[in-house]
Image (cartoon, rainbow over all chains, first blue to last red; front, top):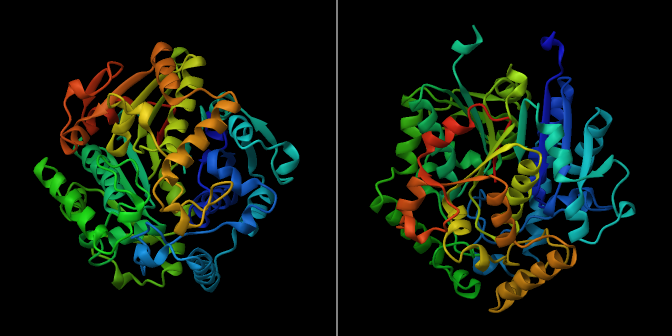
Length: 159
Length: 159
Length: 159
């Protein structure tokens, strides 16, 4: 009875900035809340999200971001202090709108049964070891391992 | 007869720049033209595309873009006036190659039956209300609502 | 016997930087190695990857990249010479970790049976002709052509 198979979502998390950390965890908590099987595969800059202390230290820079609600001229955006300022402004906006922080969403995803996988070649590239990663990471797998997980998923996304 | 089910494509539109506005609408119009059911979910910076006046005001910045055909050194790219210049150059190139503008593609997607959904948490984060969005937006839905739409789609993309 | 159908992965390659060139080719070689049917559709900035000499000349800029392991203040990152420096540092890191170069991965993907398609509207926009592309490209197809390929894929990604 194929109908009984759980829905499944797999996400490749390749970005390591504060803004782009939201989509994977918002999607993951929503899917896990609906009873879906959820796998997050952290690769490239996405490794930032699962390094010890990484989720707490995410930043957003206003440079080259004409899509921000109040875009900053690049000539100002490059001034030291603007990245921390944009980061704390975004964190403030998120807090005021009642959305959880990334460390909170990460913990929640795990508590709801989500699976966290680190990408083996990315670990090699950044010279990281298992002990550099947070405890929530289940395993370090290769790209083939991820593809096996995703082959029968309803949704597979590259973020 | 499962064969008779319409093909379906769902796209998460998370980017708000002129260049990254093209893929969702090019894909959406092509799919709708083939009779597919099409859903676009606008979230994060993608909200720019469905704010009143947003699609008309999209920009591209040459800063941090070594992939442009004629990349500009960053030290020049930050000078005020370079973002409008790159934007109008890209618009000119697009026009000359016979491709429609984003406002035109947006209208076309809607006329061909495409569905536009705004992301609820993103609306909260940017302090936006229904009346700040263009009429083409059908509803404001949460992430779980989007996942329900996408669970049986042939293609779901994160742009 | 549906079970005998080969697994299939389709990737839209829309980015043209050194870092974002890795995911499509790492996924493609892994999938092809598992016997999957693999299609890469090069569009927008991704056209860089299949232009003659393009794969060899990919760059990464440290501007607006707070996610790098050792992020550079934007005010330094804009200085001429920093893009080549970041590019050669990343290439060095990749080489030391035993990962192939992009030109090598591209060749390998093709040798393993991967299919390369160039996006027709992107070719028009960048005023490119067939002879500007590497021999590995199989054909120039429209967005509808790509959607037909992807309609029954196990995994379709937008990179």
